Length: 148
Image (cartoon, rainbow, N blue to C red; front, side, top):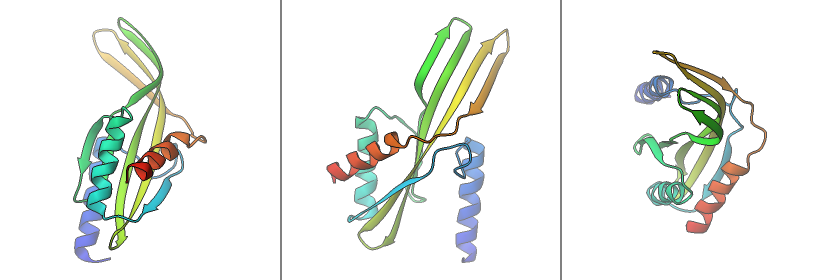
């Protein structure tokens, strides 16, 4: 790996850590990948619009580095005045162009249980949930494929 490549990787790792993004499959689901016969720019545009059409709002993105992180969405969540408890998830997409006009999209989904209590000070408890079902990730990849 070149010096510039190591610096970019370190920047991505530090940024991901600061943003609370998954760096490994650990408590997240396994990465689902698919390679498309299209340029990274075309796949980026389609992937971003597909996420939005499926109700996923983009939280952060870095087009040059090739990643998109969605906002969290509730799977099941009960919220009352100063208390909230339930399960949420978010997606992290990576786009790489291993060769011209071929783009690999990887999706990792983080699922966690969250409990929020407000007693003058916000207390936030999160616990990662191991994910076996990858239908959400596969559904996004299928939708991207249809849109291309």
